[in-house]
Length: 517
Image 1 (tube, one colour):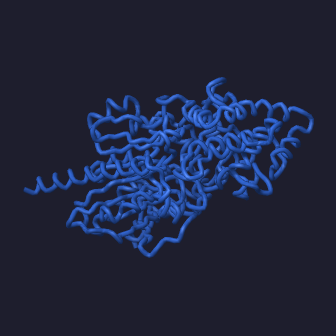
Image 2 (image 1 turned 135 degrees about the vertical axis):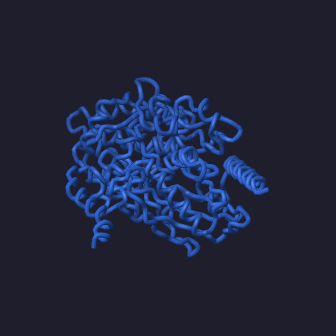
């Protein structure tokens, strides 16, 4: 009986903590400060990225994961189920040093679409490398939520505290080591892959766990977006650059539209007029609903401005192609239709994906799992100040207000953000000087049309820490499933990345053989 009680104690203790701390409601319908920090999602939903049914080559498993890797209190030993997926179809076996490719899930569920499309680069190259493929879901997303439903966990001030990047990296390490043991593949080299926030995790994993990962491909990873390293206007300046390069007249129309929206809104029945002009799904309560929607649409269009749709060009074609004599608001609405398509209503029907910018319901009132989860991460450690001045972008002035941001986070989650922790724990300041002295085998890939690229690594740090980018590329484009229609520059970028990884593996095998002699 005493042994049983010892085993149960962490669970009983943890359950009491959960029940006693579900006190803060994180979903609010009251208009609050919009901190204007976009999500870092590696890809947007469309017909290609909707979840596809996995073939039998993909096997789903659940690992008994430790809640807290960095504490030895009884409750830290509690276990939750963490999802991971394995594809061993092309695995060449450990005797020939066949590599293990690991895709790091990030701030969304690890669904079939993410495995088949977003992680396309490892799927496309598995046969060539005879690689074992592993895909790991990030803790607190999808089916990897500790102890209850997502809402219960996110409302627990204690359990929510284990939701951070350091714990996630330790999760990945535990699963990789376990799978290597299961496949008797202790000497098989591991390459980790991630896009956007997942790309940051991949680069940080190589730095924190070099004994586990031989190398990392970090796609569109804005690791310099913290602690004042990059200017707070880096992202909106990048969005503006994309639109201005696409069409000067389109850029000017957008730039002038904010004044016109405010002017109409200030009139009697102005919000009703705007609701009619933009065919909103429900009447506008505030002009910022419309402005936030448009800013979000333009930002995502720039972030994912790649083939085959090129959304910036789509929007500008609508704005510039409006009939002669169309006023500014009419031209802006034509851009919305060009991007979203014809539908019954637009702007503020969160329950209807067709009214959103790409099926993504991120916004001031979002309550979806990814939006809430990323909101917590931004308010705790992923503090990336973002704002714009009076004349540096096509948007209205909105400098980052640290006081409002902190108060908003305290109101939602009861915590004060730690803006310096990421650079303290992972580094970032003087990154070239620091990394060239001890780090190796990291590819930082970017597409310069992605506004986040301005906070990424855009020049080689050493012979083995490489910046591989394309002028025409967009957010995480090199990571996704290859298409026959892919432009030559994208094909070349992927080829360079794969050749670099081949070089890492060749050197590793040579080193192992040399040590055996």
